[in-house]
Length: 431
Image 1: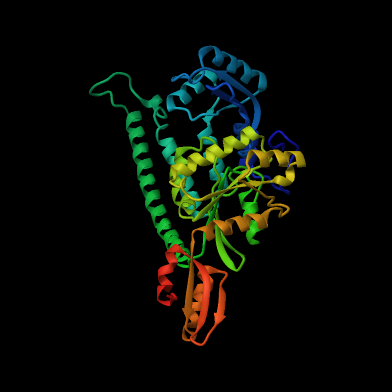
Image 2: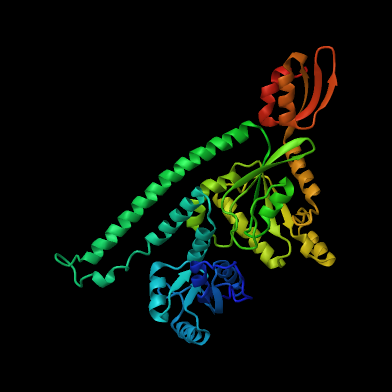
Protein backbone atom coordinates (compact mmCIF):
# COMPACT_ATOMS: atom_id res chain seq x y z
CA UNK A 1 0.00 0.00 0.00
CA UNK A 2 1.22 3.51 -0.76
CA UNK A 3 0.60 6.16 1.88
CA UNK A 4 0.59 9.94 1.40
CA UNK A 5 1.74 9.60 -2.18
CA UNK A 6 5.23 8.59 -1.06
CA UNK A 7 7.10 5.32 -0.78
CA UNK A 8 5.25 2.34 0.70
CA UNK A 9 5.28 2.12 4.49
CA UNK A 10 5.18 -1.27 6.12
CA UNK A 11 3.38 -1.85 9.43
CA UNK A 12 4.45 -5.46 9.84
CA UNK A 13 2.41 -8.39 8.66
CA UNK A 14 -0.95 -6.62 9.08
CA UNK A 15 -2.28 -3.27 7.91
CA UNK A 16 -5.11 -1.47 9.61
CA UNK A 17 -8.10 -1.69 7.25
CA UNK A 18 -9.48 1.73 8.15
CA UNK A 19 -6.13 3.39 7.50
CA UNK A 20 -5.78 1.56 4.21
CA UNK A 21 -9.24 2.71 3.17
CA UNK A 22 -8.47 6.33 4.05
CA UNK A 23 -5.16 6.18 2.22
CA UNK A 24 -6.99 5.25 -0.97
CA UNK A 25 -8.82 8.58 -0.83
CA UNK A 26 -7.57 11.14 -3.33
CA UNK A 27 -8.51 14.71 -2.53
CA UNK A 28 -8.74 17.78 -4.72
CA UNK A 29 -7.97 20.75 -2.45
CA UNK A 30 -9.98 23.93 -3.05
CA UNK A 31 -9.83 27.42 -1.58
CA UNK A 32 -11.09 30.96 -2.08
CA UNK A 33 -8.19 33.39 -1.73
CA UNK A 34 -9.41 36.82 -0.64
CA UNK A 35 -5.94 38.32 -0.07
CA UNK A 36 -4.00 37.24 -3.14
CA UNK A 37 -1.29 35.36 -1.24
CA UNK A 38 -3.02 32.20 -0.04
CA UNK A 39 -1.55 28.72 -0.34
CA UNK A 40 -2.84 25.22 0.36
CA UNK A 41 0.38 23.85 1.86
CA UNK A 42 -1.08 23.52 5.34
CA UNK A 43 -4.26 21.80 4.16
CA UNK A 44 -2.07 19.39 2.22
CA UNK A 45 -0.13 18.60 5.39
CA UNK A 46 -3.38 18.08 7.30
CA UNK A 47 -4.61 15.66 4.63
CA UNK A 48 -1.28 13.83 4.68
CA UNK A 49 -1.59 13.44 8.45
CA UNK A 50 -5.14 12.10 7.97
CA UNK A 51 -3.87 9.53 5.46
CA UNK A 52 -5.36 11.15 2.35
CA UNK A 53 -3.46 11.53 -0.93
CA UNK A 54 -3.54 15.01 -2.51
CA UNK A 55 -4.61 14.72 -6.15
CA UNK A 56 -4.44 18.41 -6.98
CA UNK A 57 -5.46 21.90 -5.91
CA UNK A 58 -7.59 24.74 -7.17
CA UNK A 59 -7.71 28.32 -5.87
CA UNK A 60 -10.21 30.98 -6.89
CA UNK A 61 -9.36 34.59 -6.17
CA UNK A 62 -12.43 36.63 -5.28
CA UNK A 63 -13.52 39.07 -2.57
CA UNK A 64 -15.45 36.42 -0.64
CA UNK A 65 -16.72 32.85 -1.11
CA UNK A 66 -20.05 32.34 -2.84
CA UNK A 67 -22.62 31.98 -0.01
CA UNK A 68 -24.38 29.06 -1.69
CA UNK A 69 -21.68 27.07 -3.51
CA UNK A 70 -18.37 28.51 -2.20
CA UNK A 71 -16.96 28.63 -5.77
CA UNK A 72 -18.41 30.65 -8.59
CA UNK A 73 -20.22 28.80 -11.40
CA UNK A 74 -17.30 29.00 -13.81
CA UNK A 75 -14.83 27.70 -11.25
CA UNK A 76 -17.20 24.84 -10.40
CA UNK A 77 -17.05 23.69 -14.02
CA UNK A 78 -13.25 23.79 -13.86
CA UNK A 79 -13.35 21.79 -10.62
CA UNK A 80 -15.52 19.11 -12.25
CA UNK A 81 -13.02 18.77 -15.08
CA UNK A 82 -10.10 18.62 -12.65
CA UNK A 83 -11.81 15.89 -10.60
CA UNK A 84 -12.26 13.86 -13.77
CA UNK A 85 -8.68 14.49 -14.91
CA UNK A 86 -6.96 13.76 -11.56
CA UNK A 87 -9.11 10.84 -10.48
CA UNK A 88 -9.98 12.58 -7.21
CA UNK A 89 -12.78 10.95 -5.22
CA UNK A 90 -12.97 13.63 -2.53
CA UNK A 91 -12.92 17.43 -2.36
CA UNK A 92 -11.29 19.12 0.65
CA UNK A 93 -11.98 22.81 1.30
CA UNK A 94 -9.50 24.99 3.19
CA UNK A 95 -12.30 26.91 4.96
CA UNK A 96 -15.14 25.79 7.18
CA UNK A 97 -18.16 25.40 4.92
CA UNK A 98 -21.70 26.33 5.78
CA UNK A 99 -23.98 23.27 5.62
CA UNK A 100 -25.71 24.55 2.46
CA UNK A 101 -22.36 25.20 0.76
CA UNK A 102 -21.28 21.65 1.53
CA UNK A 103 -24.54 20.12 0.24
CA UNK A 104 -24.56 22.20 -2.94
CA UNK A 105 -20.91 21.46 -3.69
CA UNK A 106 -21.51 17.73 -3.34
CA UNK A 107 -24.54 17.94 -5.62
CA UNK A 108 -22.63 19.90 -8.27
CA UNK A 109 -19.32 18.02 -8.14
CA UNK A 110 -20.66 14.50 -7.63
CA UNK A 111 -18.09 13.53 -4.94
CA UNK A 112 -18.05 13.85 -1.14
CA UNK A 113 -16.95 17.27 0.15
CA UNK A 114 -15.24 17.89 3.48
CA UNK A 115 -13.95 21.11 4.97
CA UNK A 116 -10.89 22.01 7.00
CA UNK A 117 -12.70 21.50 10.31
CA UNK A 118 -13.76 17.96 9.38
CA UNK A 119 -10.16 17.07 8.50
CA UNK A 120 -8.85 18.41 11.82
CA UNK A 121 -11.55 16.61 13.80
CA UNK A 122 -10.71 13.37 11.99
CA UNK A 123 -7.05 13.77 12.96
CA UNK A 124 -8.01 14.51 16.55
CA UNK A 125 -10.19 11.40 16.67
CA UNK A 126 -7.27 9.30 15.41
CA UNK A 127 -4.75 10.80 17.87
CA UNK A 128 -6.86 10.91 21.04
CA UNK A 129 -5.77 8.13 23.42
CA UNK A 130 -6.89 9.12 26.92
CA UNK A 131 -10.51 8.86 28.06
CA UNK A 132 -10.67 12.64 28.43
CA UNK A 133 -9.22 13.22 24.96
CA UNK A 134 -11.79 10.91 23.39
CA UNK A 135 -14.64 12.68 25.19
CA UNK A 136 -13.36 16.07 24.04
CA UNK A 137 -13.09 14.94 20.42
CA UNK A 138 -16.58 13.37 20.44
CA UNK A 139 -18.02 16.58 21.87
CA UNK A 140 -16.36 18.68 19.15
CA UNK A 141 -17.56 16.30 16.43
CA UNK A 142 -21.16 16.30 17.67
CA UNK A 143 -21.30 20.09 17.88
CA UNK A 144 -19.85 20.37 14.38
CA UNK A 145 -22.26 17.81 12.91
CA UNK A 146 -25.38 19.08 14.69
CA UNK A 147 -25.91 21.85 12.14
CA UNK A 148 -25.35 19.39 9.30
CA UNK A 149 -28.18 16.99 10.18
CA UNK A 150 -30.63 18.92 8.05
CA UNK A 151 -31.30 17.13 4.80
CA UNK A 152 -30.16 13.68 5.89
CA UNK A 153 -33.75 12.42 5.69
CA UNK A 154 -35.14 14.57 2.87
CA UNK A 155 -35.98 11.47 0.84
CA UNK A 156 -38.72 10.76 3.39
CA UNK A 157 -40.23 14.25 3.49
CA UNK A 158 -43.58 15.08 1.88
CA UNK A 159 -44.11 18.11 -0.32
CA UNK A 160 -46.44 20.92 0.70
CA UNK A 161 -47.21 22.71 3.92
CA UNK A 162 -49.84 22.64 6.60
CA UNK A 163 -51.74 19.83 8.33
CA UNK A 164 -50.91 16.38 7.01
CA UNK A 165 -47.61 17.38 5.47
CA UNK A 166 -45.32 16.69 8.43
CA UNK A 167 -43.69 13.55 7.14
CA UNK A 168 -41.54 10.96 8.95
CA UNK A 169 -38.42 12.64 7.58
CA UNK A 170 -38.98 15.78 9.63
CA UNK A 171 -39.70 13.69 12.71
CA UNK A 172 -36.48 11.74 12.20
CA UNK A 173 -34.44 14.94 11.94
CA UNK A 174 -35.95 16.21 15.17
CA UNK A 175 -35.20 12.88 16.84
CA UNK A 176 -31.60 12.90 15.67
CA UNK A 177 -31.10 16.45 16.86
CA UNK A 178 -32.59 15.67 20.25
CA UNK A 179 -30.36 12.60 20.63
CA UNK A 180 -27.33 14.64 19.62
CA UNK A 181 -28.16 17.41 22.11
CA UNK A 182 -28.70 14.82 24.86
CA UNK A 183 -25.33 13.26 24.08
CA UNK A 184 -23.65 16.68 24.07
CA UNK A 185 -25.14 17.46 27.49
CA UNK A 186 -23.96 14.09 28.81
CA UNK A 187 -20.45 14.61 27.47
CA UNK A 188 -20.28 18.06 29.05
CA UNK A 189 -21.27 16.56 32.43
CA UNK A 190 -18.64 13.84 32.14
CA UNK A 191 -15.98 16.32 31.11
CA UNK A 192 -17.04 18.46 34.07
CA UNK A 193 -16.25 15.54 36.36
CA UNK A 194 -12.89 15.01 34.69
CA UNK A 195 -12.17 18.73 35.06
CA UNK A 196 -12.85 18.52 38.81
CA UNK A 197 -10.19 15.80 39.10
CA UNK A 198 -7.80 17.91 37.02
CA UNK A 199 -8.52 20.90 39.25
CA UNK A 200 -7.49 18.86 42.30
CA UNK A 201 -4.19 18.03 40.61
CA UNK A 202 -3.68 21.67 39.64
CA UNK A 203 -4.36 22.77 43.23
CA UNK A 204 -1.74 20.36 44.51
CA UNK A 205 0.80 21.73 42.02
CA UNK A 206 -0.05 25.30 42.99
CA UNK A 207 0.22 24.47 46.68
CA UNK A 208 3.71 23.17 46.02
CA UNK A 209 4.69 26.76 45.07
CA UNK A 210 6.80 25.45 42.19
CA UNK A 211 7.05 27.73 39.14
CA UNK A 212 4.75 26.50 36.38
CA UNK A 213 5.80 26.76 32.75
CA UNK A 214 3.61 25.95 29.74
CA UNK A 215 4.76 25.05 26.25
CA UNK A 216 2.57 26.63 23.59
CA UNK A 217 2.84 27.07 19.87
CA UNK A 218 2.10 25.73 16.45
CA UNK A 219 1.53 22.02 16.08
CA UNK A 220 4.65 20.10 15.04
CA UNK A 221 6.98 22.86 16.28
CA UNK A 222 8.76 20.30 18.47
CA UNK A 223 7.17 21.08 21.86
CA UNK A 224 7.10 17.48 23.06
CA UNK A 225 10.70 16.92 21.95
CA UNK A 226 11.67 20.07 23.83
CA UNK A 227 9.89 18.85 26.98
CA UNK A 228 11.75 15.54 26.78
CA UNK A 229 15.06 17.35 26.34
CA UNK A 230 14.46 19.69 29.28
CA UNK A 231 13.07 17.13 31.73
CA UNK A 232 14.45 13.77 30.62
CA UNK A 233 10.88 12.54 30.17
CA UNK A 234 9.70 10.13 27.48
CA UNK A 235 6.64 11.93 26.15
CA UNK A 236 5.54 10.40 22.85
CA UNK A 237 6.69 12.39 19.83
CA UNK A 238 5.96 12.12 16.11
CA UNK A 239 6.50 14.01 12.88
CA UNK A 240 2.84 14.72 12.28
CA UNK A 241 0.34 17.44 13.11
CA UNK A 242 -1.48 17.24 16.45
CA UNK A 243 0.58 14.28 17.66
CA UNK A 244 0.06 15.44 21.26
CA UNK A 245 -3.51 16.01 22.45
CA UNK A 246 -3.41 14.99 26.09
CA UNK A 247 -1.74 17.41 28.53
CA UNK A 248 1.48 16.22 30.13
CA UNK A 249 3.31 17.79 33.08
CA UNK A 250 6.88 16.98 34.08
CA UNK A 251 9.48 18.57 36.36
CA UNK A 252 13.06 19.68 35.88
CA UNK A 253 15.61 21.31 38.17
CA UNK A 254 17.85 24.27 37.44
CA UNK A 255 20.11 26.12 39.86
CA UNK A 256 18.59 24.31 42.88
CA UNK A 257 14.98 25.19 41.95
CA UNK A 258 12.39 22.78 40.57
CA UNK A 259 10.09 23.82 37.74
CA UNK A 260 6.92 22.21 36.43
CA UNK A 261 6.51 22.28 32.66
CA UNK A 262 3.33 21.32 30.78
CA UNK A 263 2.78 20.37 27.14
CA UNK A 264 -0.64 20.27 25.51
CA UNK A 265 -2.42 20.39 22.15
CA UNK A 266 -0.71 22.44 19.46
CA UNK A 267 -2.24 25.36 17.62
CA UNK A 268 -2.87 25.83 13.92
CA UNK A 269 -4.10 28.56 11.60
CA UNK A 270 -7.91 28.73 11.70
CA UNK A 271 -8.14 26.25 14.57
CA UNK A 272 -11.86 25.38 14.68
CA UNK A 273 -13.84 27.00 17.47
CA UNK A 274 -15.34 23.60 18.35
CA UNK A 275 -11.85 22.31 19.08
CA UNK A 276 -10.89 25.30 21.23
CA UNK A 277 -14.17 25.03 23.14
CA UNK A 278 -13.97 21.25 23.67
CA UNK A 279 -10.30 21.38 24.70
CA UNK A 280 -10.65 24.52 26.83
CA UNK A 281 -10.16 22.54 30.05
CA UNK A 282 -6.97 21.04 28.64
CA UNK A 283 -5.76 24.40 27.34
CA UNK A 284 -6.23 25.89 30.81
CA UNK A 285 -2.87 24.36 31.67
CA UNK A 286 -1.55 27.27 29.63
CA UNK A 287 -3.87 29.83 31.23
CA UNK A 288 -2.84 28.86 34.77
CA UNK A 289 0.88 28.81 34.13
CA UNK A 290 3.28 31.48 35.39
CA UNK A 291 5.22 31.61 32.12
CA UNK A 292 4.55 30.56 28.53
CA UNK A 293 7.34 29.27 26.32
CA UNK A 294 6.08 30.07 22.82
CA UNK A 295 7.82 27.47 20.66
CA UNK A 296 8.15 28.03 16.92
CA UNK A 297 9.89 26.09 14.15
CA UNK A 298 12.91 28.22 13.22
CA UNK A 299 13.43 26.20 10.03
CA UNK A 300 10.14 27.49 8.58
CA UNK A 301 10.28 30.33 6.03
CA UNK A 302 9.91 33.72 7.72
CA UNK A 303 6.45 34.28 6.27
CA UNK A 304 5.29 30.89 7.56
CA UNK A 305 6.92 31.51 10.92
CA UNK A 306 5.07 34.81 11.34
CA UNK A 307 1.78 33.17 10.37
CA UNK A 308 2.35 30.42 12.96
CA UNK A 309 3.12 33.01 15.63
CA UNK A 310 -0.05 34.91 14.77
CA UNK A 311 -2.14 31.73 14.92
CA UNK A 312 -0.77 30.96 18.39
CA UNK A 313 -1.47 34.54 19.51
CA UNK A 314 -5.10 34.22 18.43
CA UNK A 315 -5.65 30.98 20.35
CA UNK A 316 -3.90 32.31 23.46
CA UNK A 317 -6.17 35.36 23.32
CA UNK A 318 -9.26 33.17 22.91
CA UNK A 319 -8.45 31.13 26.03
CA UNK A 320 -7.49 34.21 28.05
CA UNK A 321 -3.73 33.64 28.22
CA UNK A 322 -2.52 36.49 26.03
CA UNK A 323 -1.40 38.60 29.01
CA UNK A 324 0.88 35.94 30.49
CA UNK A 325 4.67 36.46 30.60
CA UNK A 326 6.08 34.85 27.47
CA UNK A 327 9.41 33.82 25.99
CA UNK A 328 9.79 33.15 22.26
CA UNK A 329 11.75 29.93 21.63
CA UNK A 330 13.17 29.28 18.16
CA UNK A 331 13.39 25.50 17.99
CA UNK A 332 15.07 23.28 15.35
CA UNK A 333 18.04 25.60 14.75
CA UNK A 334 20.09 22.47 14.01
CA UNK A 335 18.34 22.48 10.63
CA UNK A 336 19.69 25.95 9.77
CA UNK A 337 22.96 26.99 8.19
CA UNK A 338 25.12 29.62 9.90
CA UNK A 339 23.79 32.31 7.57
CA UNK A 340 20.19 31.28 8.23
CA UNK A 341 20.81 31.32 11.98
CA UNK A 342 22.15 34.84 11.75
CA UNK A 343 19.11 35.94 9.76
CA UNK A 344 16.60 34.49 12.22
CA UNK A 345 18.46 36.04 15.17
CA UNK A 346 18.34 39.45 13.49
CA UNK A 347 14.63 39.05 12.73
CA UNK A 348 13.83 37.93 16.30
CA UNK A 349 16.50 39.43 18.58
CA UNK A 350 14.61 38.70 21.83
CA UNK A 351 14.04 35.03 21.01
CA UNK A 352 16.05 32.12 22.40
CA UNK A 353 17.42 29.76 19.69
CA UNK A 354 17.51 26.11 20.72
CA UNK A 355 17.65 22.61 19.33
CA UNK A 356 15.64 20.07 21.27
CA UNK A 357 17.39 17.32 19.27
CA UNK A 358 21.03 18.32 19.90
CA UNK A 359 20.51 20.13 23.21
CA UNK A 360 21.99 23.38 21.91
CA UNK A 361 20.64 26.43 23.73
CA UNK A 362 18.77 24.51 26.44
CA UNK A 363 20.90 25.90 29.27
CA UNK A 364 20.31 29.41 27.96
CA UNK A 365 16.57 28.72 27.83
CA UNK A 366 16.53 27.47 31.41
CA UNK A 367 18.55 30.48 32.50
CA UNK A 368 16.14 32.86 30.77
CA UNK A 369 13.22 31.08 32.43
CA UNK A 370 14.89 31.48 35.81
CA UNK A 371 15.46 35.20 35.18
CA UNK A 372 11.77 35.74 34.44
CA UNK A 373 10.82 34.21 37.78
CA UNK A 374 13.63 35.98 39.62
CA UNK A 375 12.32 39.33 38.39
CA UNK A 376 8.98 38.70 40.10
CA UNK A 377 10.48 37.62 43.44
CA UNK A 378 11.13 39.68 46.55
CA UNK A 379 14.48 39.66 48.37
CA UNK A 380 14.09 38.68 52.04
CA UNK A 381 16.28 38.17 55.08
CA UNK A 382 14.95 35.59 57.53
CA UNK A 383 16.07 34.08 60.81
CA UNK A 384 14.97 30.46 61.12
CA UNK A 385 15.27 28.99 64.64
CA UNK A 386 17.05 25.66 64.85
CA UNK A 387 13.85 24.21 66.32
CA UNK A 388 12.03 24.90 63.03
CA UNK A 389 14.15 22.93 60.61
CA UNK A 390 11.08 21.93 58.62
CA UNK A 391 10.53 25.57 57.64
CA UNK A 392 14.09 25.76 56.37
CA UNK A 393 13.22 22.83 54.12
CA UNK A 394 10.10 24.71 52.95
CA UNK A 395 12.26 27.69 52.10
CA UNK A 396 14.49 25.57 49.90
CA UNK A 397 11.40 24.20 48.15
CA UNK A 398 9.95 27.64 47.46
CA UNK A 399 13.06 29.73 46.89
CA UNK A 400 15.48 27.20 45.48
CA UNK A 401 18.88 28.78 46.00
CA UNK A 402 19.46 30.32 49.47
CA UNK A 403 22.43 31.88 51.22
CA UNK A 404 22.59 30.72 54.84
CA UNK A 405 24.69 31.63 57.84
CA UNK A 406 24.54 29.70 61.11
CA UNK A 407 24.28 31.94 64.18
CA UNK A 408 23.59 31.55 67.91
CA UNK A 409 19.82 31.99 67.55
CA UNK A 410 19.28 30.09 64.33
CA UNK A 411 20.02 30.14 60.61
CA UNK A 412 20.16 33.54 58.92
CA UNK A 413 18.81 33.12 55.40
CA UNK A 414 19.06 35.56 52.49
CA UNK A 415 17.02 34.58 49.44
CA UNK A 416 14.26 35.64 47.07
CA UNK A 417 10.66 34.48 47.45
CA UNK A 418 7.68 34.55 45.10
CA UNK A 419 5.38 37.42 46.05
CA UNK A 420 2.59 35.01 46.92
CA UNK A 421 4.79 33.12 49.38
CA UNK A 422 6.26 36.01 51.38
CA UNK A 423 3.40 35.97 53.89
CA UNK A 424 4.18 32.36 54.87
CA UNK A 425 7.50 33.43 56.34
CA UNK A 426 6.60 36.92 57.55
CA UNK A 427 7.13 35.94 61.21
CA UNK A 428 10.75 35.02 60.45
CA UNK A 429 11.62 38.36 58.83
CA UNK A 430 14.64 40.12 60.29
CA UNK A 431 13.62 43.67 61.16
